[in-house]
Image (cartoon, rainbow, N blue to C red; front, side, top):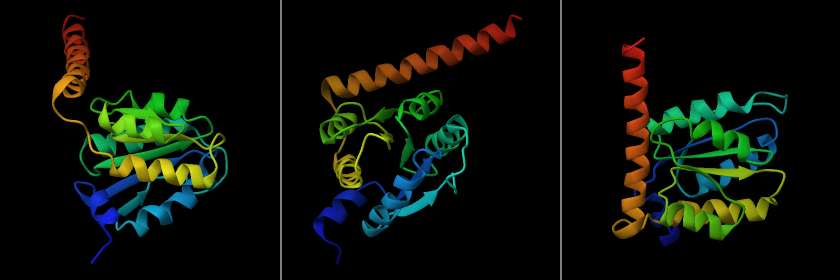
Length: 172
């Protein structure tokens, strides 16, 4: 039987994708065993070396996989977390939040139903990153009330933008 903390993680989360550019490569390698120790199936979507690479490609690849439902959640890393979060948030259905501490991680999940956690590898120690990941994985979304209403509004904004894009393509 798994410990209670692991069962809490697995309540609705079985598969997690993780990705990083060269700036987050080393921290990603430290987080994968943590995720696996919680009984999660982990897919490493790159990069697979510390050689310089472009974060938009990795952020997009992981975000599409989460948006399509191949993974319940995703974790992205780059030096600051900012660039790769911007890339991920371009994908409809993604709510990627840069979290620098456990407060951010808890709020990203409880208030915003963040489906991708983004970490700035240059800003965090390995123990701090592990605490953030653990809190983010075990915090449920506070469904109902103002938080659910606001997350639904985010989805409505995405649908409105997509509809406008389709409409403008037809009138060209």
